[in-house]
Length: 121
Length: 119
Image 1 (cartoon, rainbow over the protein chains, first blue to last red):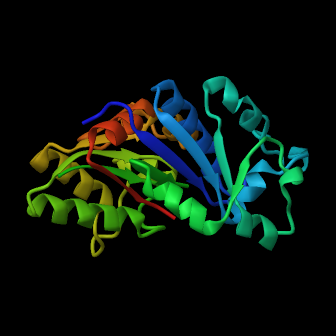
Image 2: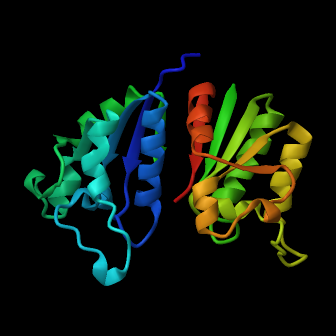
């Protein structure tokens, strides 16, 4: 048993409407504090979590998108976005608020194969 | 095999908790160890003893308590998710304890497999 594992967080849901995205981010930060190898993947509606220019005042919900910008301060630097999910929603890399690596579905599945723990929210 | 379990949905509303429970039972029956079940998101609602389902239905909360009692499974409820939803120590069913997300990460590190049940 190694105490250093590869954790991948797969974010699949829109940032608001359900609490999954916000609470997933909380696990990511704790996992980074445990000095694990952390990577984040954004697929399906999860790509909206990284959309630039989020304004949540109208829905009276906390805007947690600045947290994604703070991730590199926690040494969380591996952010992957699925190309097919972006394209299906008319989004491009330039619409996102942080630097990410855009990968195709096949490349992502190969990356998932290398992980020890995959948590999907 | 040593298994960690993550339950992300509440009882009755969603099948995740039922499936997770049945999975734990089957795994234990096959000689595997379920070291910890971690309750997150609405999954924290599995831990309240205030739950009173109709008599002709399964009692999801009591079922988890029994699993802890009979097999020593550690039932951990995320403190931040619990406080958001009004789950505190005084309403916990037997066998459950409230702790931090570090317990989930630890389960991921120590178990051979961490299995998620959720939406």
